[in-house]
Length: 408
Image (tube, rainbow, N blue to C red):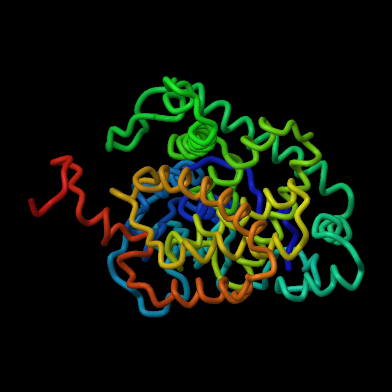
């Protein structure tokens, strides 16, 4: 299993698979073909159907500039696609095609270039399932946090403290921002309103909900506005983990090092999902993004609360299990509706999952590995219209022009 350094990426929103991945691919192709007179990029599948809303064409044009670039949104399936987020690059001199490259944007900003050996670093973790990890930890009498340090080295905590500070900054910036998000849906930023809203009676449970949701909205709105965020594990689900951790740090005054420990444990959960299933909404629906983020946040909370490994697994399993079947149906291809609210709901659900696992420890029936496999099988069986194509669900029933649901 790869290093968790590769899971937490700092970049611009709104989509790790539709902007960060294509951007990375374009930089590689441009570097390899600097003398091209023009470029042509053909987008397929989800990239073609939601690329404009996600800013795919914009980021490709920016990276390949000043060389003239034609972006083609193909509505045809060439029949040989292995992943729904696929794009073909071509370089030309005159009418002659001098180079080509097919790329799969597999989620979380990661890409696979067809016909090339993976340039990714070697595995850092010998274990590839939670069962294997738990067995090893019990044999060595170590915690998951210690397991991370054993494999990554103590310097991982400096890296994760930097990641945490970036997460905190994205939330703080989102809480300060007001106005309308770009894209044409006229979605009002709500994070600051949520954070500052006063209640006649200050009920602790309501205040917790208010803060957690405000933090999640803040990060997700920054992502939707093309701001700098951390993939956790994706751009579209970037608000869940920081919302939970920021609330807990504010309540219990944990140090940044403790937050790094929590991110380390969350990273193990995210990496297992990425390896054994998918974190791509185009491949497995929103369950692969928001469900994964919820599992990561639940595990992170358990680490902060110093719960044992059994409770960490239980919390992550509960969080994923109750996102099974969640579709990815962004209205107009924008990472705004229902994406932003889903970050807030999942953040609160992560806290509930951790608490429930603590109360019901010893009664678990379903393993984390089993629910991850179930999520993947559910995702690949899901109708294409509900896997980030904006062809079904809310995206189909909403009219941008009328601003109301169709069929009334």
